[in-house]
Structures are given as C-alpha cells and as structure tokens.
Amino acid sequence: MTEVGARGDGLANLDDRPLYVPLTLAGERVRVRPGEARGDGRVAVLDAVLTPAAERVEAPCPHFGTCGGCQLQHMAPAALAAWKRDLVAQALGRRGLTDVPVAETVSIAPGSRRRATFALAGSGRGLTLGFNARASHRVVAIDTCLLPEPALWALVEPLRSLLVSLPTPGKGGDVTVTLTDSGADVVIDLAADPDLAGRERLAAFAADHDLARLSLRVAGASPEVAAERRLPQVRLGDALVPLPAGGFLQPSRAGEAALVSRVLEAVATAPAGPVADLFGGIGTFALPLHASGRAVHVVEGARPAVGAVAGLARAGLTAEARDLFDKPLVGKELKRFAAVVFDPPRAGAAAQAAALAEDGPGVVVAVSCAPATFARDARLLVDGGYRMESVVPVDQFPWSAHVEVVAVFRR
Ligand SMILES: C[S@@+](CC[C@H](N)C(=O)[O-])C[C@H]1O[C@@H](n2cnc3c(N)ncnc32)[C@H](O)[C@@H]1O
Image (tube, rainbow, N blue to C red; front, side, top):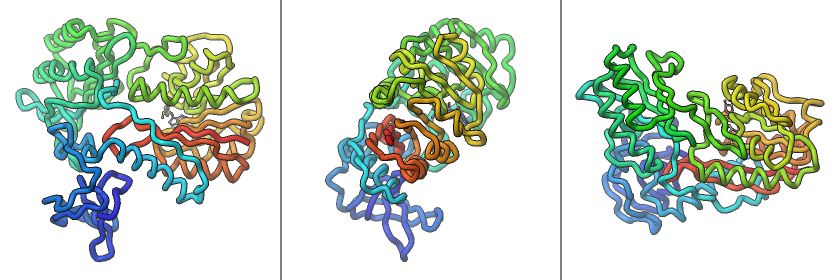
C-alpha cells in the first residue's frame, strides 16, 4: 500500500489505476480481492495483512470493519493525528500554500460526542438501530460504541425498546440524540403518526429518561414536538441558548472548547471594535466573543438559529438571517468590523472569502470541517494580501477521515 487516501482507505496501484483498500495502511503488504469500480479505479476487499505497518494497532471496538461509523481504528492514535495534519497540509499544498505553519493536531478523545445519529432499519421485532455498514445502506446493529458520551449511549437500548412498538420507516429513517445542558433532545423519524397508545409511550419515555425534548419527524416533515419537559439549551459564553430542533452544534464540548479558545485568542489581537461571526449558527463563537467584551454581529442562513441568538436580546449582540453563498457581506458592510470569524458548511465560503480578500479587516479567523474547500478559500485570502499566521487541525471525529481546522489570517 502506498498511502492512506483522504477517505481513510489504503491506496495501491493496479494497472496504473488506483486501488482503494479499506482497513489497510501505508507500507503494508496485503492480499486482496479486487471488487467494484470506484471513480477512476476499483475498491478491493482485504483478505489478509501479510506485512503490517508499525502503526497498525488492534481496533478497540468489536464492530470495527463492519460498522461504517469508523474508518481508522487500526491506526495508532499518534499516527492518526499526524495523518490528519498531513491531510490539511496537502490540501493547502494543492493550492500552492506550501510555506504554512500547520500545527500538530489537537485530538479530542473518544467518548465525547454529544450528538449522534443512529440509522433505523426494519420494524417491530425486526427493528435494527445502529450505524450504516461500510459503503452500504445496510444498518448494522451495535451493542457498544466508543464515540458518544456515556449519557448519550445509555439512551440507545431504551430507544430501541421504545421503537419496536412505533411505526418506524422500515428503511432510510434515523434517530438523532443531542445532549444539551438541560437534558437530551431526541428526534425520531416515523413513517406515520403514532396512535394514542404510541403517543402515551413516547411521553412516558421522555419522563422516565428525563429528556428535555422528544420530537417526531413524520414521513420526512419538519420535526414536531411530542414532549417538551424543558427547553433544550446550551451554554455558550455566559448565555444559555435554546437549541432549535435540528440546529447545528459542535459535535463535542471539548472540540467546541478547542475551537473557541483559538478564536478568542486570535480576535483578542484585533483592534477594538465589533466582530462579525459569519455562518454563526446559534453563536458558538459569537457568545464567548460577546462575553469577552466585543460587540458581535451574527450572520447565519438558518432562521431558527438567528431567532435563538436574537431572542437573547443582549446589548451589543445582533443577528441577521442571510444566505452568504448568494449574498456575502461586502464592501462597507465588512469595513465596520475589527475582525471576522467564518465557519461555513463543507462547501466552504468562496464568495465570502473573495469579498474578505477585497475589504476584510486585519484579522480573519477561518473555521472549517473540509480541508479542500478551506484551502480554496485560504488561497483567495492569501491572494488578497493576507498572511496565514496559524493553522490548527482539530480532530473531533476520532477514527474517521474527518478533520477540522481553525486558521488565523492577518494583514
Ligand atoms: C459548520 S456550521 C457552524 C455553525 C457555528 N459557527 C458553530 O460553530 O456552531 C455552518 C453553519 O452555516 C450555516 N449555513 C449553511 N449554509 C449557509 C448559507 N448559504 N448562508 C449562511 N449560513 C449558512 C448553517 O446553518 C450552519 O449553522
């Protein structure tokens, strides 16, 4: 195997085309069976590792290999951290940004996920609640998972028992559990409205497990609250912010803290003045920045998130609903800020980065969950005269091929 590719599969060459071999590492000699086509190459099934790499370790979870939730449990933690750092450095390198100080990866420990989405298949006694199998829509039942916080995992078996008596979708549905600071917020996909007895069981479940809120998404419609015992709220800065159903939240408290501390540090070096938090969600960065004494303007596409921030009604904290892909902040709108933080979805923020390159302030902090689009946006900023001062990979998704980045640009 020559390397581990961006999706976490080992790569080799077969007839001058890539061969993707899941569960293998660079430098290994392996025996495989070539399988179906993928992109410009083929996927292969691993039969045996003949010469293991030094960084190969025993996977800690018994479901690893069948469950698709993790890709890289067979790689030692230090090697995984270095590999994620390289992913970021290589993405920047592809955009010609080679002279960049990419820091060591900040690795968030397993057992810290506060949000998880479990896949549903079958119904009644044949119900499976688990994760999708590797590269498949088949759902694998799991009796253990090392990723979630224990309080989250403790709800999974009771949820499975509850769901066998409800009209689950058969296939394609899921259940999302989020631990908020006022209790768990659960959203369940159902194929049809539950009957009265089903509704009573749902309410009893919420009470027995002290949930904050239990919502139903019936036949793909928007979530409808079935039981709200407390408002689900998250502590951000010195505020308790209501979490809209399905609203974005950083996947772990420790990961959020790692990102927030770097954002605060960078913004503290900007001159006095207001800060823009673009793609700001419910204020993960805005509220700590506000608590640090800055006036902050949040711009975000999801109206419920904007409503949650605006509803706090704090002096010096404003929020605006706006599609930043179509209508980025430009010109004078940008010039009033002393610093800008932007944290777009995986597609990145090309239009906004181009506008920042023209009229952005002295300090810009980029947070990203997609190295390729981050590198594209970084290139736009650097071409606009920014220097990339620091880039820190943050691994909030242990054993996956995902990595996040927080980077500081200055001019
Ligand atoms: C990665 S999340 C970050 C949210 C927030 N910064 C946080 O850390 O909690 C990206 C955010 O961008 C928002 N978003 C997605 N597309 C958008 C668009 N076109 N315009 C504005 N906001 C958008 C999403 O609703 C989401 O809140």
